[in-house]
Image (tube, rainbow, N blue to C red):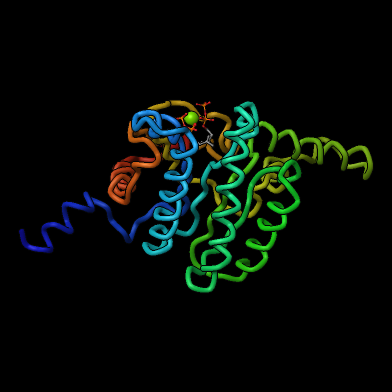
Length: 248
Ligand code: IPE
Ligand code: IPE
Ligand code: MG
């Protein structure tokens, strides 16, 4: 088969000059991926971390501005302690490697979520990753850790309420922008496309405020099996849609 035809088949109808500006992904299905192979769930998380690395690198390569990934939710603490601790160990491994490759990859990294329940070591690694990469241009990758959309909105509202009490600010002056500016995502445009692999068709508390007009793409593929081709399918689907934002 001629090379150009193969390339065209691998990138179904994606117009790389019209990419969404911000893609967000709920990285789900690691446990089921492992179960199907008779492996412990932790093996699924390890495979999922590899997929994240591949997809994040590829997003930078194609010139995406923002990638936001859901790595650990405020509800995921309910899982057995061994599973939580293995996810945290993988996170540490990922961050150490990311710091090591920072100069080569030059991906700007940020974290959404309340990091205080993480160990001081992990918090320090997150802070170091953010600090070293903050001047990099190009793709920004936001990792949602101990993130919950309701928690995020609650914090913003609490902050505003404090301003009203302490600074005598009038509640009437509160606008949508005041909330957006107090979210973990302050300054980052809303996601254009939200992808959820694994077959679940729900948000699970992800970017509740920011997703008001996001386009969703659901697929049965489990996160560790997610590939560049799957990403192409999601983007191609997004590019066929008509976004009206309430207009005509
Ligand atoms: C997503 O995969 C990873 C995290 C939530 C940390 P899951 O662990 O939820 O995988 P499934 O949904 O059980 O297959
Ligand atoms: C959402 O997946 C959270 C992450 C992928 C980090 P879950 O597996 O926690 O969501 P539910 O429980 O199926 O809704
Ligand atoms: Mg899940």
